[in-house]
Length: 250
Image (cartoon, rainbow, N blue to C red; front, side):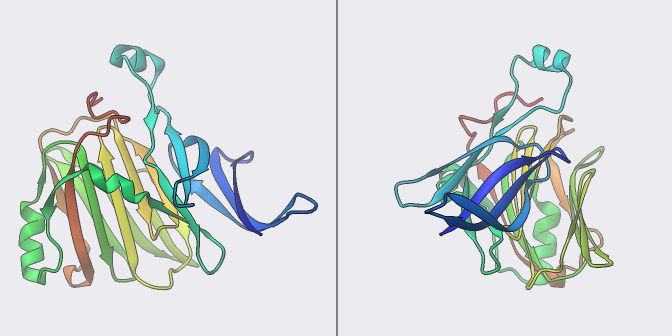
């Protein structure tokens, strides 16, 4: 019986997953693959089966600010977006935001399937006027970067650079080492006030807390990225998540 388990790695403050075989007679789990559930702010994970038999992961996004700021804000923590779990052909855990989250989309703020010139013009003019946004894009395998910045500088940034045995992926001040993927890069980012949930190739997740209120709209900047290597780029304005912190931009 193929199975998966999640637990906190005692050697690091990271949430680990394991997949393998569960012996139904001995009730013994034989681990075969392991990895990290989230490289950022994600805690107290629980799973359940939905009405269609899909395994759904729920989690809590803790704070990364002093107690004095929590008291002043009047709230602390929020629910993470639910993740749909599955296994790839290698037995690694795949994580996608559950399709039900698409109901939060209010309207599309950028369309896919544009030419390189049209894409360049649209990216330069794209404005995100509040922190309630979904972005999804792809890029050819290799180094790439993307930054969301306001008038004072970067607010959220992604940099992928070659490493000795794959790539180094850096989101703001968090860096992780990745093996070379089989195909292109596929990225998915959700912004909700001080929360940024980032997914890479459905295998790696970094949840960030960013407490700096942007000075005006956020703009997409792609310095160092050849737009010819950029695949579809889509964004959606989101309705505030009733379980999230959108009403309390910190």
